[in-house]
Length: 198
Image (cartoon, rainbow, N blue to C red; front, top):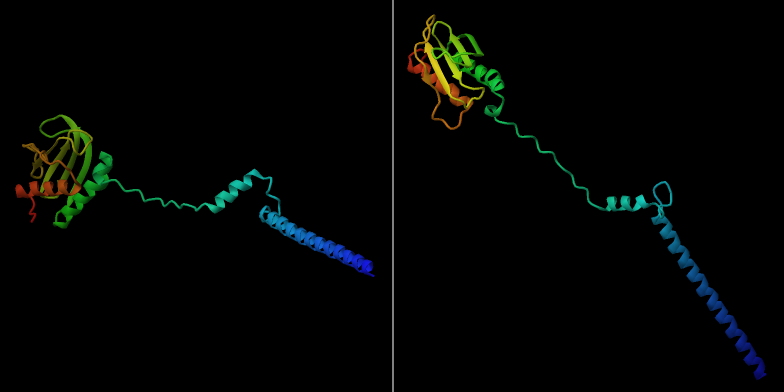
């Protein structure tokens, strides 16, 4: 009888160890399958394609994880009027502003232009703004070179007369600006009592 009991114990021990082994085996298989599924999910793209062997996928992954740096284009700072090409500055900025200032004071300009011609009195070739103010006067503003910082001169005359004097213009100024040129022209005209500028 004892032998039967011992045999039964051995059988039951064998069964329980084999049951334990099979349960452990099943648990390990489930864990392995779960891990494989997770790896598969990681290695699939949106369309379900396997990325494990795709060398570009690593680059894409890095690109997705790196923060994108947005560059904001700064608006280009516009250059000052005085730095623009000479003829553009004179024709598009100085002449229209001068006409406006003289009109505001109740005078009418009948003719104003920029030419590369002979300077009044001196006769040398340079850039000359000739301006005729109706029934008041004419003046010639001359630039030695095609540059607003070059040597300048001004000549004035009464209507239907030729200028008799040539004077230097803005020789001591380090910075030549549109407003400065206009204010000094008006100052010269007022100094000769040709127009009343307050």
